Structures are given as structure tokens and as C-alpha cells.
Image 1 (cartoon, rainbow, N blue to C red):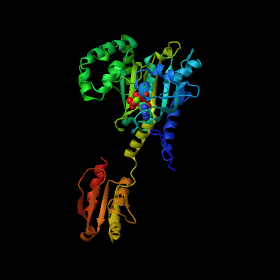
Image 2: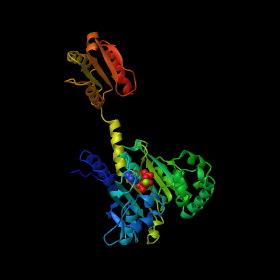
Image 3: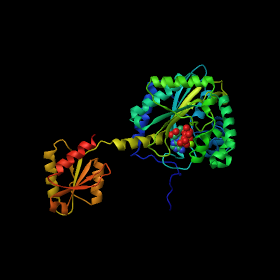
Image 4: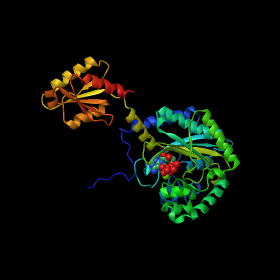
Length: 427
Ligand code: ATP
Ligand code: MG
């Protein structure tokens, strides 16, 4: 009988991986507690209509990524593709935003029917933060500042950068949208296929097209910044001032628009170059219109969501690049009768370089397996003694961390060569 396997794009997270997940989840929960945010737990399925209304009919998510089903009574239900819509629904249903300004977080699986690849899955996990009732830029700032602290606590600060933009109020955006469409219509046939389709559905998304030709056409397009209303401009300036004061660095990216319809004013993304194309690890913004759009009283709101798979990948990548090396020098004998010479060489080096960590590979092994061990040890150089080196009283020196030709030196010279190599690699 054939064995069953998991559904494409839906991952098992195995015991070797769970410690990293737990480390991330613990850091997130601790952070939320220290900033006075409270947890909310939400259903994994919601009525399909909720997402259509909240996210927007013509967004990528609603158009082609949702897992929709009919349940046994014929109601259309959807596995949640994101958490904001459900969170707003729950707040309205339970009156949480009535005379209160809750700061909330949630975490759990989300579902999108996308093409699976590294950092992009059909079931993935988000940690989301949503705040309600605060219209001021101090709220946007706090949200960004606390995510910056998270990166520091996880050792990821050097691996991520913050991109920031303002979309303005809905009216300003609509005026810009019209101007953009009018401009792009002239070049319709030269745009990439996706952008041609978006011209009538979601033209703002054309701004972050990866197509070179489309980007060239966009160079002379109307700029969103020129359409911003004064209120949004002032809000954005205030946000930037808060971030400056708290030492959070950012890059203003005028093409950052985000894929969901409900954003206004601030949008931001934390991005990394370490994960290839799936570089956004946290994304968010202000959505002052959504609560009213879902039937509540007008309530300003701002939130963000992090992709936990991408953060785990990033933590692994950073850990791998900074892993504590166990050795400086890895010594290996290759072939019959080389171990005596290798041991003697190690002793010579321990005498000459008392602070260096010199690891001798007992038991020999194939070239491949010894080099694998050498690499894993974190050593800067490998010293190789084959039968010909032993006969000639020489050593082959191989650099393991940089592109550099292997050299052969005499055993009398080797201590000096190693001393130089180690001094260089610690610069
Ligand atoms: P992308 O541009 O990468 O498709 P998005 O704009 O669709 O992202 P959001 O809806 O803002 O993403 O979701 C917030 C975060 O959730 C993303 O920044 C990313 O880290 C993560 N995320 C989104 N979709 C996926 C997915 N299919 N697999 C894994 N993580 C995802
Ligand atoms: Mg997406």
C-alpha cells in the first residue's frame, strides 16, 4: 500500500526544529507582556464573506489564494489567510473596542493557496499584533519600536532593515490611483502580464512589480507622495521623528504599497536579503477604515504580522554564520602511516602556538569525511599530511573560510604560516 504524505505546502515541524520555534515564541510572548499587550485566540475558519469584505475582492489573497469550502449546511467558510479580519470581527462581536483601546496579539496557522517554495507555504504561521482606538503616530511608532527590540533580542538586528511609506487617506489614494492608471494606460501593452491585469483590478500593486520594463515605465509615473493629504504628511513626519528619537533606522520606500486593501497612512515592512525572494519577515500598517467597514463605529487601528517560518529560517541562517568555532586548526593524516607525523605536527604547533585550538582528527577516514569534519569544526585552516607530504617533510595548508589557493610548506615553516592565517581571520 502506498504511504500517505502531508498536503503540498503544509509542513511538519520536527523535534529538531521545535527548539528554535519555542525560542522565538517565548521571546515574542515576553515582549508582548513587557509592553502591555494582551493575547486573543481566534478561530482558524471564518465566514468567506469576512475576508472578501476586509481584505478586498481584487487582492491576490482573495482572488486566488484562499482555501474556501462549503460546510455541510452549504455555508461558504474559509481557512483564514491572515489574522486582522478575524481579530476585528471578534472585537466587534464582543465589544472590545467600545470605550477601550485594546492592544492585542495572536499567533497561529494561516492558509494561502500559493506556489510552495522556500519561505512560502500553504500553511504557515504568523504572529500578529493589532491595536485599536489610537489615531496618533505614537501608536505606529511603538509598534515599530517594539519589533526593532525583538530583532535585537533575537540577534537579528544586522539581518533586517525597515522600509516605510505613507499611503495617505483613502481619498488621496483614489486620486493617485486615477492618475497612475491614466499614465500607465499609455503603455498598457508594454507592461508585464500581471501588471496589465492589475491596471483594472489593483493598480497600486503595479508599483512593486519586479519586471524591469514595467519598472522603467514607472520611473516617470506620478508619485504617491505628491498626492498625500496634509494630515497624512504630518502623521508620517511625526512617525519618522519618533523613530529617529528612539534610534530606529528606516528607509522610505515610495513604492511600498502592501497587498491588502485596508491600509491607509503608514505602511511598513521589515525585510532581509538573507532568505532570497521571500525577504519580508514582518509587515504592517494603519487601517483606520476597517472597523467601520466591518460594521463597527469608526475606530483607528494599526497592526502588523510576522511570518514565523521566515523568522526561524533567518535565525538559523544567522546562527550558522556566527556559530562558535570549536577549532582554529584542523589536522588530518591521509593514508597509511601518516598518523605519527600528524600527531608530531600537532605537538609542534601546540608548543609554538599555545593559545590556538588545534584539533587532531583521530582515526583518519576518507578525504571527504575528514574535510566535512574540518568544515564543521569551524577551523580557519586544515593541515593535510598525505604520504607524499610525510616523505618530503612538508604540509599542505588549506584555507577553509576564504577563496585562496592551497599552499605546501615545510614542517619547519608551518607554525609561521598558521600564525599568519589566524591573525588574518580574526581581523
Ligand atoms: P509576500 O509579499 O511575501 O507574499 P504578503 O504581503 O502576502 O507577503 P502579509 O499578508 O502581509 O504578506 O503577511 C505578513 C507576513 O506573513 C509576510 O511578511 C510573511 O512574512 C508572512 N507570509 C505571508 N504569506 C506567507 C506564506 N505563504 N508562507 C510563509 N509566510 C508567509
Ligand atoms: Mg503574498
